[in-house]
Figure 1: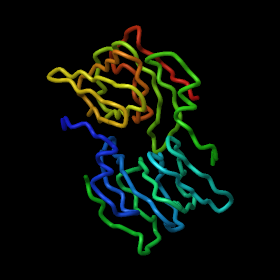
Figure 2 (figure 1 turned 180 degrees about the vertical axis):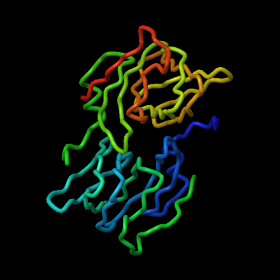
Figure 3 (figure 1 turned 135 degrees about the vertical axis):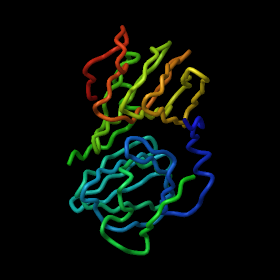
Figure 4 (figure 1 turned 180 degrees about the horizontal axis):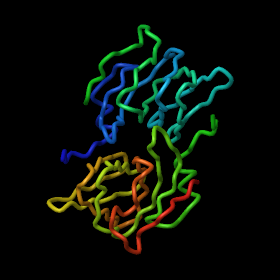
Length: 121
Length: 121
């Protein structure tokens, strides 16, 4: 058993890239990731995976085709599989993600935001 | 799509029972739960499920047979399947849990802490 506990804010200090989630844990085929977000991501969906966003610091907008929501610190949202969404962070936001280990970063969309292999920190 | 975002601290205001996790989200066969913990739980393991604890408020000790750890606010730990553990909270702690929907509260152990069907809030 890896006996290290994980301190979220310490982990966030270890990287500065935006839109490049870092893996901090894995359980039951799911991964826990941290991401720093700033600016606009890209419209995409995940055909087979639901995706959870929990805001640790700052504020994150998630645009959907028919509405948008704003998540503040301590707020979470689960985007169901197949639902197109576009995360937007006018100011830098720190976010915890829960999602299957199999998920692709930008779904089937390929663009400059796409990252193939995410790193553990 | 349920378009409600979830504010963790608002959800924590909705209940006071200790050791009775409340479900706040479900994704990919996993559930997100909130629990208020105070005192000692019970030694148990989960044969098939890894279990993640993230402390939202206060401090949580998790005893293992060969060591113990203390998680403070903003710290998380994943207890691997099959590993006996006993959560202990000397003062009330607020914790977010991430675990498979199939998990049993106290594993195969039955005691006064066991709860069969958890509620959504």
